[in-house]
Image (cartoon, one colour):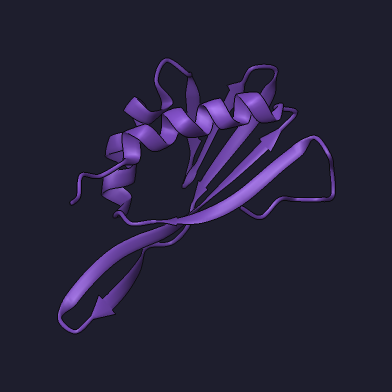
Length: 103
């Protein structure tokens, strides 16, 4: 996780998520739970506790291994005015709904 050090009240990080844009938008409502949110292009905006959160979906990318193609996108999270406990709770709930089975 890469933090934004310009402001102590900002927690910002990006990560690769192995999914298509269609998968992201399909799973987003469940991942957000009862949290109301707005969409502006590829950006999701919401409030978390007394702060705000902006989730930005990067352009679709693809990894190729021989004939196998694996879609992914970089997803950026920027929490402003959200304490670490609330940020971690949101992240745990969000991640739970984007988990995929495996084994």
